[in-house]
Each structure stands twice: as C-alpha cells, then as structure tokens.
Image (cartoon, rainbow, N blue to C red; front, side, top):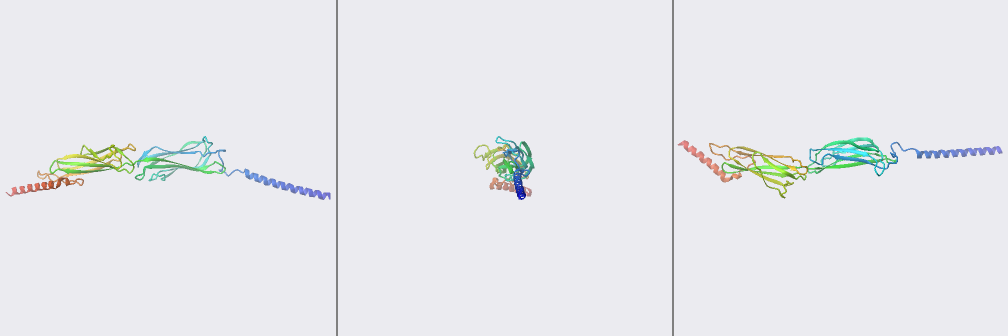
Amino acid sequence: MASASGHARRQAYSTRVAQVCAWMLVALACLGTLLVPAPAGADQNPPNCNQNNLALDIGRDKLIVRNGDTINYTISASNLDSPQGPACNLTGTTFVFVAPATDGTPNGARTVLRSVVDFPAGTTRTVLGTVPYVVAVNPGVTDTVAEAASTGTLHDAPVNHLAQVVKTLGSTVTQPHTTLSASVTLTGTAPPYTAEYTYVERNDSTTPAPMVSVTVTDDQCAPITYVSGDRDNDHILQPGEAWVFTCKKTITKAGAFISHVGAGGVDVADGRAAPPESATVTTNIASTVRGAFVLPVTGSSVPLAPLGAIGVVLIGAGFLVSRRGRLRSRRS
C-alpha cells in the first residue's frame, strides 16, 4: 500500500513540474515577443529624437526678369537640432526642383537633385544643386514661380513616417513693348515742297511697364519735336499712352527720300532699355521734264490729298500749255 501511494505521489509531482515548466515556457515566449526589436529601418533614430528639422532652402540670382533672361536657382538643405529638441534621421530622401511653366506656376520641367539618399541628423547646410531656367512665359504673366521639394522617411518613432517639405519662390516679370508708326504729309504746289513727318510711339506692354527717356530718331529729318500724348504730364510713357512727335523737312529736288525711323525707351521696372522699334517712310518726287517740275509721286505712306484738287489742275494745265506752245513753234 505504501509503495502504491508513494508512486502516485511521485507521478502527481512529475505532472505538476511539467505543467509549471510549460507555463514558464509560455511566459518566456510572451516576454520574447515583447522584447523583439522592430523590423529593420523602423526605429526612433537617434534615440530620443523628437523633431522633424529638415530645412529646405531655395534662392535665385534675379528679382525682376524678362522673357529670355536666365535665372539661376540654388537649392540647399540641412537637418540640425533646434532649441525645441534633437533632430531625427531621414532616409530614402529625394530632392526635386520644379521650374516655372509658361503660365508662371511651378508646373514646368522637373530636375531630380538627389535621389533616395540618407539625410541624417546633424547634416549641416548642403547645396543640392544649382539649376538654370530661361524665362519663357505667356504675354501678361507678371510672376514666375519655382519650387523645391523633398520626400523621405522620418525615423521619429517605432513606426516611421513620411516627411515632405515644399518651398516656392517667385520672380517679377516685366514685358515692355512699344509700337512705332510713322507717316509723312507733302504740301505745296511747286518746289520747294514741305514734308511733315508724324511719329506715334505707343506703349502696348502686356504687363505694367511704364517707360522713361523715350526718344524718336529719323535719319532724314531733324529736329523731332514732342507734340502730345503724355496725359498726366509725368514724362513717363505709361501703358496705354501714345506719344505723338513731328518733324518738318523742305524738299527742293527730285528723288526718293527714305526715312529710317527708330524709337526706344527705358523700362522703369528694371531700368533696362525696352526692345527698340523701327519704321520706314518713303517720299518719291519725280524728276523734271525739260525744265518743268512734274507732279510729285509719293510712296504708300504719303497721301496726295494735301496738294488739293486745285494744285493738281494747275500743275496739269501748266504742263499742257507748255506742250501746246512747243508744238505751235515747230509748225511755224
């Protein structure tokens, strides 16, 4: 009996020991699960960091531009501790520059400056690249905007997060433009004739581009005199204004007189000369016939109206009388 009871006690003890061991194994397994590190790359790094301190900068070398000008953009970044706390690491970071589109918005050509790179905490200011952009915007666009952007993984917690920074920068666009027109009026019924030239310089810029130092030149006539058009008398050719200039010249001989006219001014916005304008005016005076001065023949820019109907009749009648007199002298 004693032997049987002892065996039963030993068997019960063994069973309990096995159960305790099993429970311990389960406990260790659970504890091991809690202590297993996060998957590689998912961590708070450096330990105890608590800031997304990525600083992205974009700069340019020109403030006011025109179509055809080149702007050089410089993009840089840093990842430093701040008074608020230590910076966290970034990995897989891509930096991109986006040029202005023709409408001035940052939707033009994209340039990848750095692709999928680490940008750890403590990185001082680093120039990522300098990108030239040739200004090419539509008429009327007054602002051209570029963009710098970065996208990466921020190691700020056991679960990482997406980190994005976008910066934009604009430049003022000026598009100065003028239109020059020139004409000539010929007066007189006999030599010498008077040619009066009229020039109109109109500011038809598509952006606000007032102009100063406006000049008109003509290689066939001087001096040129301002007449009208400066509505507020500020000596500035404002958008929408048309300034009128005149010049008179005496013509005493036959020939073709071609005036090469030029006009220009300085854009107030950027202090640079506006694109020059030019025009051509032709006045044709026919040669004499046996000492008689023939009716002037003018180019398309010169109307015959100033001679008047009486002048045309007188010149024509004089020519006929002269011819009949010569015929009678021959018959006699």
